[in-house]
Image (cartoon, rainbow, N blue to C red; front, side, top):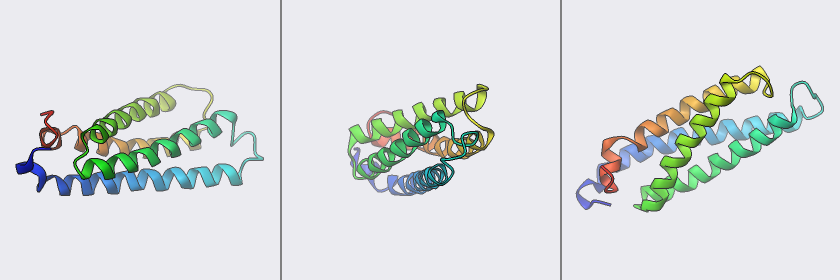
Amino acid sequence: MNTELAAGHNAAFRIVRVLIGGYLALSVATMVAVVVLRHHASIVTDAVWVRTVIVVGSAALMTSFAARAARGHGRSFLRLRLVSAIMLVAIAVIIAIPGDFPVWLKVEQGACGLLLLGVALVVNGKHLRSAFGRG
């Protein structure tokens, strides 16, 4: 990481950590709801189970990536950029395509998408990219 930019990146990573924390909290809360409502097949489908596990896993990974990237780890920064973009695309597909996912999950995924949009905007912004030599 560029040493002259190191001091200025802390505020950006604080924002990223808050957004990812919200994504993780919402994802875990959704997983708890899925477990509680598991006997209601119309509310909790197999696709819902798979999706919620993937989302909790991605949120946990992003939490780790953000912590390491904030300490200057370039590979973690790249992983954070990639996973935030991939999950945003996956969320857009889930919301857009009719079928396997109930409306309640699409709404929850929309909220996750807004949080990840914030993450993607910050980590792909010029300030952090230049701090990691990718400006």
